[in-house]
Image 1 (cartoon, rainbow, N blue to C red):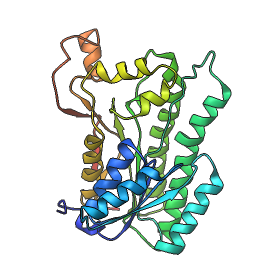
Image 2 (image 1 turned 90 degrees about the horizontal axis):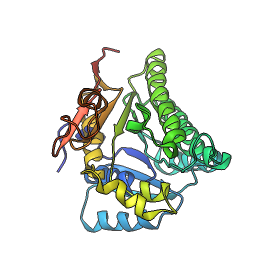
Image 3 (image 1 turned 60 degrees about the vertical axis):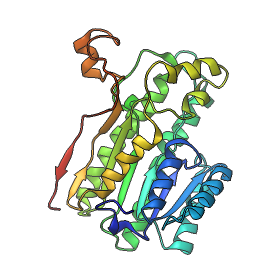
Image 4 (image 1 turned 120 degrees about the vertical axis):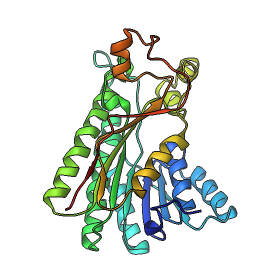
Length: 293
C-alpha cells in the first residue's frame, strides 16, 4: 500500500548503494513496495538477486534491479550510471547508503585502511551525487532527491580510537550534504538533499569493523537496544514523502532511546545516567525548512 506522499515516486528510478545487506537492503525493499524501480548496487549481488526474487514473489508493484559495482572504483560507478541512463532513462532518487569502517586508528592505523574508508564513504558518495545530479539536470528533472545515509559519528567523536578516522569520513558527509544543499539552491533547482544520521543500527557493520574480534562486534549490539534497518527506512520514506516545497536537510539523527544523545550525556554526567530510558526513537538535531525556490 502506497504511503501518503509516495504516489508521485511510483515507477520512477531510485539508486541505492550498498543494497546487499542491512540498511541498504531494507531501503531497497521498502521502495519496491512503494512502486519504484530500484537499482540496488554492491560489490556482490547474490543477496540483491535473492531480495529481488522475494519482492517479485510478494507481488510488490515496483522492481529491484541488481547491479554489480565496486564503489571504490570510479570507472565502475561511471559505467553503472551509463547503464542506468541507457537502459532506464536516468536516476530520480540517489540514496548514498554504502559505507564501511576499518579498525585503523590515527596513531597506528594503516594507510590502506584510511584510503578504503575515504574511497567508499567520501569519494564514492561524491561521485554518485555528481552523476545523479547530472542525470537529473540532463532530463530536466527538478524534483529529484539525494539522500546521504550518514551516522551519529558525523556529529560527535567518541573515545574509541578504532572509530576516529571513520568518524572523520562521516563528518565529511555532514559537510558535503550541507554544501550540496547550498549548491542546489545556487543552481535554482528544487532537487533536495538530505542527511540521515542513525546511531547504533544492528547490521553487519560492527562485524566488519571488528572482523578479527567477533565477540567484540557482538558486544557492540548487546550493550543497548539497537535500531533496526527498518527504523532507518522509515526515516527515508518520511523524507521522500514530504511535500515538494519542504526540505528535510541537516540532520535527521535517530537513535534508540536506550542510547542517550550527546545533550543527555552532558546533563547526566555519564553514559548510564538519568538520560537513559527504555525504548523507541528520538529524532534530534532535526532541521525542517520550507522553501519557495
